[in-house]
Length: 228
Image 1 (cartoon, rainbow, N blue to C red):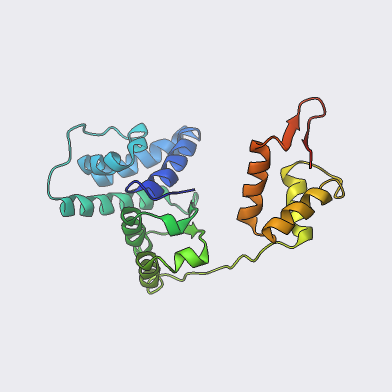
Image 2: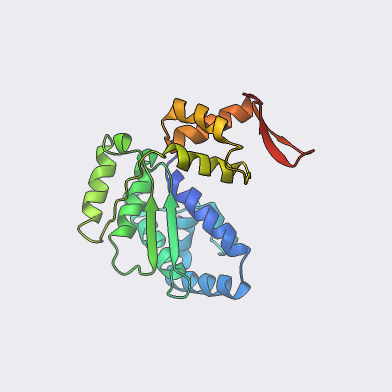
């Protein structure tokens, strides 16, 4: 989840996850990306690394601070981010970027997303953002960003409705690793009455039950147990 408190927080979180996966993957893929990005960005890679420090894990970056006006630095950052995504997104290895709680996305991250999603040269890249409808449409900057993006790229919107009691029970069976569908029925009833099947609310309620030790994991039975 994102609070949007820090500039570029949404982008940094997404890229850190990608770079961690890249570092634990095949060495030849890492070398391909390193060579491609280095050849395209050169010394300007330091602007990208200043915002996304994990980039230094795959690139040798000039430690001297970036110079120039803030607008010039932002232009270089946009170019650097677009170039980086273009290099890592290939037909053999397409990239999907997912940002949760998009309604909290900070302005700086939105500016970079806008640059990437309106760049038709970036192929084999998909962006997925999840958000709460009421908060999304209350954020004028976010709404305007995606109105512009829709002029460049097809945008598909998928609305997720609340879970039915049966669907919530199936979710609990999966999360709590039970096979007998009757085992979680009482728990499902309590959560469903409180949340009306809202996914976010249901998960939050499970976490709260765990915090209050109503829901605990038993090492003796190797199962989740609850006292209602």
